Length: 300
Image (cartoon, rainbow, N blue to C red; front, side, top):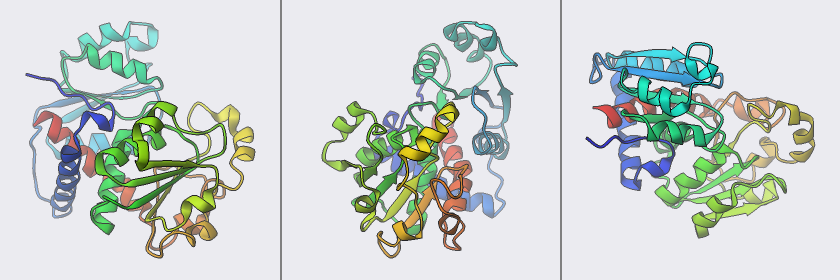
């Protein structure tokens, strides 16, 4: 049996990604109606965390519980990975004992190496380069509120980070226009930019980028592991806050998203994230439903 991994969105076709979005919406409706659906009964998800988490851990654990399965939380303190066991050896051992492995770590090369040596599906729950699970939730949220994202103008404001990279992949798979606004020196990976071609525009002016946007997205200026750069980044990202003035340049019905946690008063104003029409909280909840669709897709 072919073992499929989910390390980036590019492990899916555009049709499969749309299928997952629609299935997530169905599973959300079922869960809200308290329908018991347990396709993963007696299946076990191993969850390896090198980085702290709120939404990722809760959503995957809850998802496995809803599906009748179980999960095991593993930190570096809990495994031999934290004591220097080779990644390949850990992958060979752990994948013989569980049915799926979710990893949240720093280096994308590490998760790629783990997947090469795993007998079961490996899910990227965040690396320094990509955050594909969050994009599943974001695309589900957009579809719920605005329908098909094809042809829409999506604007990323801020660092060309792992979230930005996954938005670039999504633009290619779902055929939407992506505009990235970031300070000079903080642009997304040049190879990804080249591959995206005409679907992607990179600017250094947030106000120009935001014009007529259907969706405005941002993230913290200093991600996990970059805390020592906080002051430097606050200076570099001056003028890149998503606030009421910036949102007024977008389309009148534009949505705002943030993967959370947010730093109110830095990358986003409190007025934007706490607005009564904010979809940030739907977006956060949809991590659960989108990842359940992914688990079902990979395992059931």
